[in-house]
Image (tube, rainbow, N blue to C red):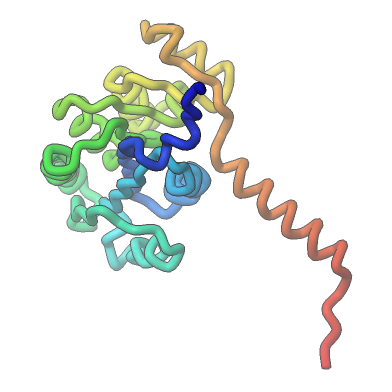
Length: 213
């Protein structure tokens, strides 16, 4: 009798996937990714909240993550909050150190980062220098004249897996010399939330108006 791989899966070791989030906007784009990893029976979510999530002037949005019920593996303070170039530079360094310590203690199979901010750069640098695979979402996008575009392309060169939102973005990644087999057009994860909202609205309309007593 052949062995059923599905029956063996509960005993299989889970692959730890680190997801690095640093801002409210980027967390919103990552929510469906986080949910998919957390729900997968063979994956273990390692969620890291850092950067602007921990700053009071920006709403301390780590509380939003906690309210959503996700377990946070590590919270890492990076910036002081004055938004100066020096603060960004020192914040990047603190982020790399904090993430590297975590990845050394609890090594993930893959480090997932999104976009072009210093939090994503810290995740990519810490992942590469500790021997982890790095997956970059939204690589290849452009923002002409913006410093963040330089960060985005630098993260692309550090990444091993490229999850592009569009075919145009995928072509830009390929022109940077990345192997074709490492580039995948997966769409924008933020569209998942739009779809959820549309489904909710459709369901509410189908149910009809709520009567007040």
